[in-house]
Structure formats: C-alpha cells, structure tokens
Length: 429
Image 1 (cartoon, rainbow, N blue to C red):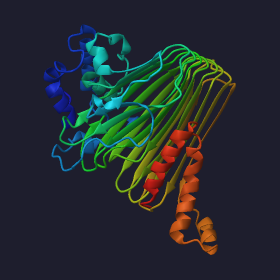
Image 2 (image 1 turned 180 degrees about the vertical axis):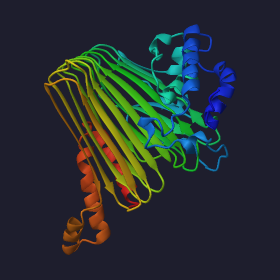
Image 3 (image 1 turned 90 degrees about the vertical axis):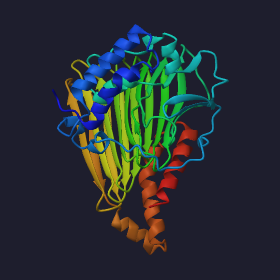
Image 4 (image 1 turned 30 degrees about the vertical axis):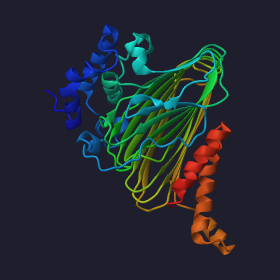
C-alpha cells in the first residue's frame, strides 16, 4: 500500500465520518461524486516535487500537518473595505447570512450558497471530474462544504460589483476549508466579481478553494481576487474557466498573504472571438512563497489570450510563475501573449519562472517573456541626485514597476482598491 503524507492519511481516516455531515449527503449523485474524488485523492496524495508542475513548490510544511493550537486573537469579522451593496460572506468555510447583504440583485442574477443548493438536490451544478488528475481538486470534491453559486441569465448585467468574502477566524471550527464555487453566465450576460480571502495573522489553516466558471456566447466576467490570508496559512486555489464564442474573461489576482500560496488557473477557449485575460501581482516578504501557475488552451480558431504577472519580493520570499499557452491542431489565427517580471528587493529573495508555448498550428501569433532583477541603480542614483531621499526614491521606482500591471484592471473602483492595498504593503519596504 502506498505510504501517504501525514495530512493525506488524516483525511482518509476521517472521510467516512465526515461525509455524513457534509451538504448533499442524502443525494446519491453527490455521494457518488464525493466518493470518486476521495478515491482519486487516495491514489494521488498531495503532490510532491517529483511532480513536474509542483517542482518549484514544496508542500511538506502543509502535508506534515498544520498546527491546531490557536495563538491568534480577533475582535470578530472585519468590516469589508471595498464598498458595494452586494456582499456575500463565508466564515471558516460556511455561509454567514448575518454578515452578508444579498438584497437588491437584479432579476436574472442569482447568488446562493453551494451547501443550500446541494441540500436542495441541485447536483447538476457539479461536473464529472473522473479524468482530473489534480490532487487538491479531488480533495475538494471529497470534502467540499460550501461556496458560492452565481448565475446570470441571458442578457442580464449588474452595474455594481459583487463582493464575495472568505474570512478565516481562530477558534470557530475546523482549520481547513474546502470551498467549491460555481459561476454560470448566460449569453451576453455581464458582471464584475471581487473575491477576497482574508485571515487573522497567527492563525494556521488550510484554504482549498475550487472555482468552476462557464461563460456562454458574448458573456463577460470581470473576476478580481485579493488573497490576503493569515501569515501562517496555506492557500491552494484552482480556477477553471470555459469560454464560448465572443466571451471575455478578465482576471486579476493580487497576492499579499499566506505562508504558502498557489493560484492555479486553466482557461479553455472554446469559441471564436473569445478573449482570456489573466493578470496579477504578488507582493511577498519574509519567508512567504507564492506560486502562480496558468494553462491557457486555445481549442478553436480565431481567439486570443493575454497574460501579465508581476512580483515584488523582499527578505527571503520565493516566487514561482509557470505559464503555458497551448494551441491545438487547426486552431489557426490565434493570438497568445504572456509576460512575467519580478523585482527582487533583497539578494536573499528568489523567483523561478517557466514560460511555455505548445503550438500545433502554423497561422498564429504568440509571444512570451520573463525577467527578474533588482532595482535599477542608475535610476536610483538619478533620483537621489535630484534631492530625493533614498527610501523615497526606492518607493518611486517600485510604484512605477507595479503601476502598469494595475492599470490592466478595467474596473476603476477595483483598480483603486487594489492600488490602496498595494500601497499599504509597500509601506513596509
């Protein structure tokens, strides 16, 4: 029998008891899906560094077991900083009606919790994952407890963004949260979603969110994510998006939190005229580790994808960017661009970059680039020679490095919010 990591064995030991308390436990279809996920996870275990996609990210600090002693203190649920009338809040993996404000959504837009949908027998939201080889997705399928379900009917739109908050607090339930989120946008539907993951520093926990998105013809989703988990947390996220003809998916992920984080995204472009935009920034210091892994699959002709990711790393922080653009045979007249840049503020910080192009068509336009380095000493000297103090000059150069990727955020309110979050992080530089 395969020797499993300690954390994997813990999950195996408690699956039989746990599933009877999970949502949808009386639905045979949900039970079968959970059992399938459990079987895959049992065979896979958490990925080690011998797995090519994980060779830059070592999960042993997680798989040896995270601490269960609560050392953090909190005064309660922090108030949201981003202002919008539409707020859905989850506390330690469970929907909190008290901390949410779901009234006022327009007709045709529906936002509910996954637990409520599964308990109501709506198992059709979940897709068959029998061929999925991602261990953390399989674990999520086995233990998914809650999450949000967002649907928009054909032609509907909403002016104000929707804010989804995942808040982790000490002393209030399990220290692992397996959230499953589902987004379905009908033809020409359009909305903006802000997703936040926040936690109390000193509180050790494992967040394992999985998000499944499908956009029909002409739909547009602006999807912005702030990952500001506790400084001792582990955050392993997977987001899968399928785009039909003419659909647009714009994603921006801002990472400032977690001891170890991985943001893994797969875009399947299945329609002509569709556009996938994956951008982001990771701002890390201390011993933090942030991994961004993307796979963009062009499955039909005449569509495009764009990616820009920037990192700022201080102290002994470690960054990873793995980006792959895949163009299948006969997917002609496709455009795919990818860029990764990292700024190292310390000679102890490091970044590993692995850009890939896999092209099986001949009429395409693709590019990728990656660079990392320190602050430009000549530029720093120039600013100081103009009477600007060194600390202020450094901050000006760092601001300039980050500014152009933040400008990729098309929603002005979100752009300003993420700029404020970034500015607060840079106060510690």
